[in-house]
Length: 425
Image 1: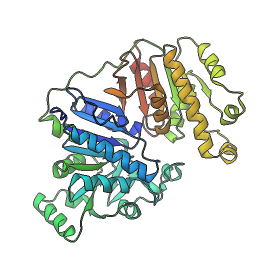
Image 2: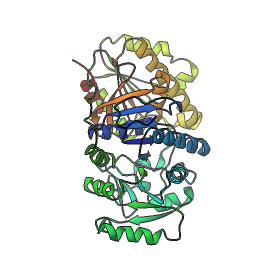
Image 3: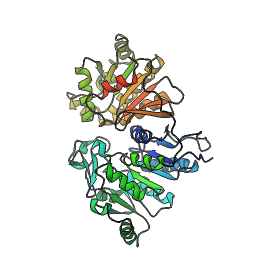
Image 4: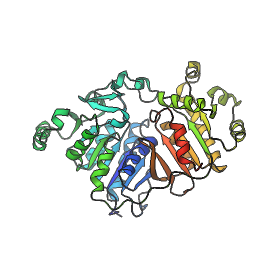
C-alpha cells in the first residue's frame, strides 16, 4: 500500500489552511495533491505524488470528533509511506481554553512515538511571526490584533506556552532566536535536560523570517511529527526536494469560462478586496441574512442578477464595512453563518452546472462549504495568486479552476488578480 514517491503528508484544520500549505509545497517543487477529507482506508493513493495534504474541518469541531478525524488522516498518510506528518493549523492559532490544537497535537504526538514535537504557527511572508514564544500579526501581539474578536476562534493571548497550557497534557520549551542558532549539540542537550522528567513535550522556536524557518527544519525536520502554520512548508519542500523525484508540471492556471467570486469572510483584508473590486467597476451583489430568511432574496433572484451580466466576472459577498450590527444581534452569528454558507454553496453549484469555469472563494468556512457542495474530493495544486493561495484543478474536472483563500490573505487587488490569472482573456 505504501507509495515510494510519497515524502510527507499534512493534516490541515480547514480547507483554506490545507490549500495554503499545499501551495508552498507545490511552489517548492513537490508534486502535491490536496484531498478533501480522509479517503477510505483501502483507497489507493496513485502514483507520483510527493506530498499529500488532507483538509479537515476540525478547527470548530467537537473535540472528540476533531481528534478522531485528525488521527485517522495521519494514519492514512503513514500507511501510504509518509515518514513525516505535519499538523497544519491556523497561523493565528486558537486561544480559547477549549481549543482543539492541544488535544489533536497530543494525540498525533503519542501516535508518532516521538518524545517531542514543535509548535510553530508562523508564516513570515504573511507577517505571522513567533518571537520570545509569543505570536505576532504584522508586529502586533495576537491578542491585540484585529483577530482578537474572531467570531469562531477568538484570540485572547499571544503567549503560545500559556495558550497550550489549558489545551494540552504536555509542557512547552521555548527556544529563543539566540538559542536557535546555537550549536546543534547544545540545543539537544537542553532538550534532553528539559525532557528528563517528562513523558513528552513541545518546543516553541522563534520564527520571524525565512532563515529561521530553514534553521527550524534543519534542527527538527527529521521528526515524525511537526505542527504549525505554513511557514515551514517552503523549507520542508527544499529538504525533501533534494531527494525527490522530478516534480511533474503543475496544471495550467488559465481556462476558458466565466469567473464568479464568492466572499464570505468578514476579515479586514477581504473587506478591502471587496471594496477594491467594486471600485474598479466590477459588478457585485450583497447577500442579506434578513432577506434570505424572509425569502425576498432567493437563489433565483441572485441568479437572475448574475445572468444579466453575461461574460463579466461577478462578486457575491456577505459582509461590508457598513454592515449593521443589528443583523448579528437579532439573528445570532450561528444563524447568519448557516444562511450565508448555505446560499453561497447553492450559488457555487449553480455556477458549475451553468458552465462557469472559475470560482474564487474567500473565507475558510465558506470555502469548506463550497467544496463540500461541489463534491470535488481531490485537487492538483498549481501556481499561487498570493502567498498561501494557489490555483487548484479538481482531478476529475480539469476544465475548472478554484481559488480558495483564507480571509486575511492577499492584497487589495487579490480578486482582480485571481480573475486575470485564471482567465484566457
